[in-house]
Length: 110
Image (cartoon, rainbow, N blue to C red; front, side):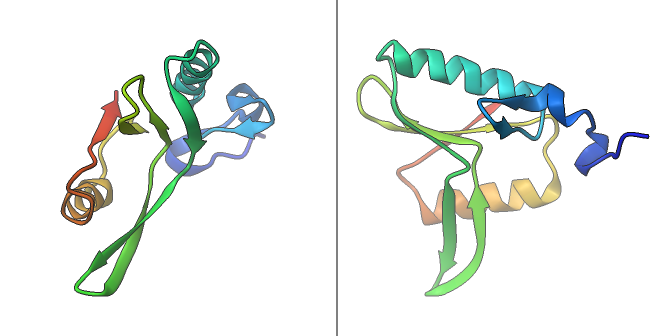
C-alpha cells in the first residue's frame, strides 16, 4: 500500500525531477518551466524553497517558505508559490510577508 503524505499526496516517483521531490506535480511542472526560462536567459538565480523570516518588532513570528525565487529579465525579484488551495496558515503568512517585505510580492501559481 502506498503511503499518503500531506493533503493525501502519494506516488513520490511521479513528483521527482533532477533528484528533487516536489510537494505536487504542479510544482514540479512549474520548476521545469522555470529551468527552461533560466537556460534561455529569461530569468536568473532560480532558488527552490527560499526561506523568509517574518519578524515583527524584533520578534521572529515564523518563517515563510516559498516554492521558488528568481530574478526576472529586468533583474527584479520574483517569489512564487504553487497553490492547490490557500490554507488559513498560508493566508496569514502571506499577510505577514507583505508587511515584513513591502518591496516584494508573492505570485500564486494556481
